[in-house]
Image (cartoon, rainbow, N blue to C red):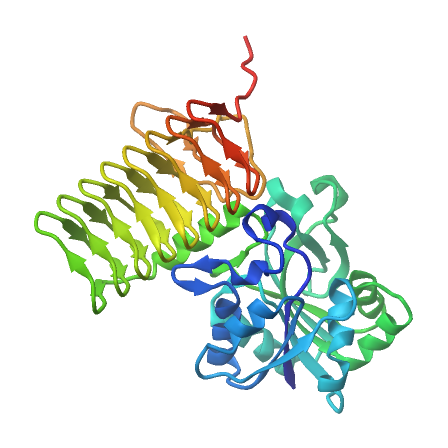
Length: 410
């Protein structure tokens, strides 16, 4: 059985972070491109070659850098999941079944073990990984309705709401074992979900439940959650060669400090945290928990960054606060910029895995989401960014602006 990894298509909900000609699968999480997480799971669980279907060369170039797995690249010729699978029909020839995995997953390799084990144990026509249903975001996922014996009744792609889903139901996890003859449906113009439903209506199609690490990185908030989960796996303190730490600087593990980093006088680094290659941390700055600086990031003096993913080649000037945010590559943020991050209790932002803060003085938890800053943006000094602000790519915000102001109910 061959393994097929899908890493093509448009950036979708991550488009503000992905420059033209690049793939969302090259966005970085704790020093690694997103595509490495699904390939690493394959390497650990299956231990064989992977066929990578891609639209942009950058993701293929990133994929072949991963040690321990041989990646066979195939350019996607037609749109959609069915088009991606059809693009690899030559590589899948001679196989009865194939393992399909989406390339935008951050997932434990044990999930792949479970799918393969269930397939060989129960010998279904189709095996599908499913995860617990997230009702608040059901409209952003594929959902499977399941019989009590674990067989799939019906799959709905991004239902309008929970009322459209027959229970019990689970989120589709983006990992499948499929018969190669399902490609015949695609050749006849049948879409991927419709083809799955046709097979499930007459064949044995099982759901394989998984409750462990699983993040489908489709929106900026997913990138934050993936960063958080990966950083939770850090242990101890790793300081690479060529790192320079001035006196009075404090590093509290867990932390991974990559090559060529400079940490100035009085800076405080509080983990779990990742500081990528050739980053500069200014004097008396505070870089704290669940922050990932993905390489060549400059943080000016007396600035604070927390619970944030910052893509490569970003400059953050002095006296700035960045919290609960995602910052695209090649961005410049001026001095005294503040990202506000406290959400009203009644709001549910798209695909936000809730970060809960429960001070003793509050009866209800508070949820936080700062700004999403697109690639190549320029934010002038003394700008305030409201919670959930989305700064479009390549725009310039004048100094002293208040950006993303929401209406206030009286």
